[in-house]
Image (tube, rainbow, N blue to C red; front, side):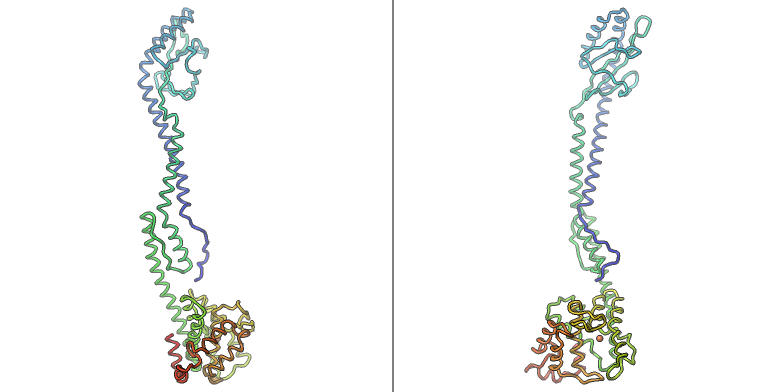
Length: 459
Ligand SMILES: [Fe+2]
């Protein structure tokens, strides 16, 4: 069957889409896990800060008053001692005092690293949270005043508890994304298993083959699509068969109309089809190829519709000019059949049935294996029928004599191997119009042209 125009051949895999989806699932899984993890961290930090802020704020105010008095009196050592003593009630807490210009007025040196104010998040009312290294903290800022003036700002920090799993949220997100990717790939690969078979069915349909079927596997939706496609293929196959049947019947009717003009060639195509199929069966053609050959043999002379009646029906031999006109019928047949969808292979037979093995035939003058095998078979069948039936310009030749001529022309006119098989069949009494054998003597002798035609039609 002809391949659909413009079809681009490519391989289809059920792994392409699952792989792409797995990558996407991995990215989405990683992102969602990171977003979810960070949300939980933020919520936990807010909860801890909310719980600790009131107590820390009260404590910061008391420390600020005591330190303010000490600093106001110029006793830095006492201020530091007060600060350290105050911190003992809040384990994990640190403090420092900064002046308005950022100068460190007091610091407890065992505490957290120096502050980075820009990374802090305000919780309102001078409470802040932020990160220092891997640790989170809550910070309360309280003014430190002396008797009359502002001495600085107290920064009281308390470390917040960070759950261990939160510290490894990235690793967790990576494992989550990997699991998402693998599960997505496995699921989609399983769900789409049937798509490969479905693709093959549709690809075959593009070549005009509506009989391929796919295993119904994969997800429910995929199995339903495969089932619907099969139902569509059945309808398309029926329609294609019907259309082809109409084409063939039309062509055969046309061919019979031509033969009906000349009583001498009536039934010729049917007999050629019988001889051709016999020979092709002998050399091992399968059923599909036999059917193509049978139709091609029946239609091999359809190009004679293009030959004028004064040439086609002329009694006796044709002159050179008339023969030149008659020689156009193989190409005319090729054009007629090639224009009909599904009959391209028959067109090759119509075009090549007058080619000769040595290249001296027509219309193209091709030789040997360049001539389609079906054309070489029809050439022998066509000649055998022409020799053994009566024409307006000659009487029917005895079968043995016709076989001798085919044997003589094997290697020049006919394919020598095919001729050898054909001769062996007919001389051994095999098939239609074979040489008489003792038990088939009467049959051969009593066979009439009409019976031959009927036999050929029934074949
Ligand atoms: Fe012909």
